[in-house]
Amino acid sequence: MNSSAGYARYAGERLSPLFQYLPKAAKSAALRASERVSGLRRQKLALFALCQPDEVNRLGNWFPLFNAETKQALLSAEFKQALNGGAASATAVFAEHLARTDATTSLNRMLYVDTKLWLPDDLLARGDKTSMAASLEARVPLLDHKLVEFAASLPPNLKVKGLTRKYLLKKVARPWLPPEIISRKKKGFPMPMSVWFRKEARSFLRDALSPSALQRRGIFNPAFVEKMIREHETGFADHGSLLWGLLSVELWQRVFMDSYRRSEKQANVFAMQAG
Image (cartoon, rainbow, N blue to C red; front, side, top):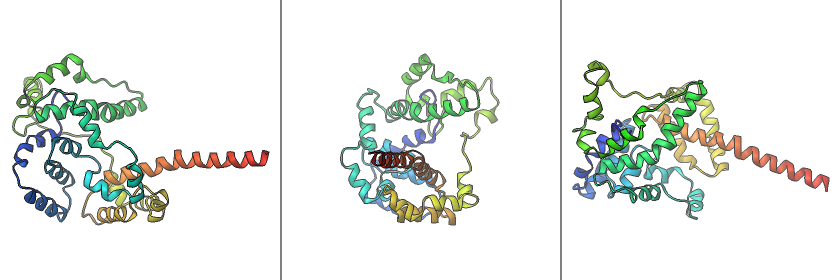
């Protein structure tokens, strides 16, 4: 990541200085207009991030599952009240890491934070787990510390030139790789969650995230989740990854929290009977 700046948000971050000159009213109007347009989830997230007034909030809102605005709508009033008791916000975590870097450009500061947070806690963790599950030993040669240190010292225009990402890496690779490989669109390893939630897994999703289940859990706002499911089913928006995240939280609660509570209750019953 730090070696080549290959993700779309690194190119998008180059536009941030332009947005700082836009009046607040113009930004608000653009955000309101985007809500009425179907699809374009990533573009809407990028617009929201670029419209933030400061660096910390901007970097904290580049392509999360839920940005600061939707997170407020997603969480229940009771859960938000409980979080006010001292839970650290995402912006506080970003601010803490930004304070540690002496990088002066927004791109290099963004790369530094991602190297400290997103890379070890998400990308490398997922890569290691999935490769080991298939009995594979994965290696990340672009993360050799000497190469990372060299890349960190490069000026931003050698990482992202205009809106071209991985600029230097592509230039170095030209003598050995054909153009169709170098210019090929970036591909991840997505699952067809969006299709599943409209077809085979539709009933399962609705059962797991039903208003009654969410009301009992007390974490998410049932009305907002229902709105997301409805928008996804009608095709107005692709909320596949967001719904997958909510489903994962609910299933994790069932496996670990609910089973723990049942065990604790059974233990108390046994202790009373024994006494």
